[in-house]
Image (cartoon, rainbow, N blue to C red; front, side):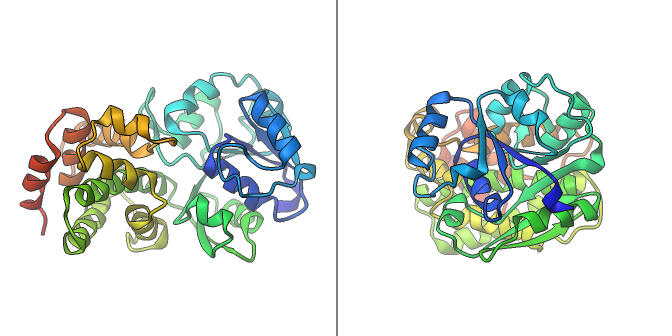
Length: 333
């Protein structure tokens, strides 16, 4: 069934480009919504993305590029959204075609700020897409390593495991291994939370904390993620599985992690605004921190989340990072 479905990717950043590369490993054409015509013109003439993962050679004969989001959505059965959470709502507002019968994959790794909903929940409520047709694409998988064709692992999450398996087959290649899961909500929240913990790891590094502390921070982050996901969506899950712990570790430790990079700058004394201006890419964890904090605080009995709380205080309450982390160290074990 996989080869019969038409896929389309929405977004033109590094992760979207990596997804395009993975999908193009077979001969099926792929739709690609790119907002700027000049980017499309460059891709068609130079056969690579001018701004992100420019080393990836793109087979333009497999790509149906368009600046019209509705044309791309109309011609596809599987819609993959890889637009940063801060911008996805403004793009979704352009959709006029009926997508309720299509399969929608979230590769966003964040919450939509305007609605406070997970991408899957938002699309289900706003566009009537059946929850069984909502899919989450999770790591651990950095776009930069996909570009280098280094062995990477993806988890395809859907409440309908047959759909998950079909999509997993579409992404599989000699350098991409795939697995499936039915914990859609847990996978989306984990993908959001790991970016916050990566910011925490970056702040710690910027402040001069060493590997010994980082290991304690990650151990506590894992338990904190378990408490949070259990609070927002209680089901049986093993937090040590790749989709949770694996994605957390690579995001917190990798030199490719933009969230860790952002946190590192904050730890070194950059203001939040100056750190954002310095980076050429979006640090999803900045927006995720606010969403996660408020979601947790809205619960009658909030989960114990000292790391999320500390990052929130630094990013949104202008608390001194050094002092905030000193208080955090007393809460970790």
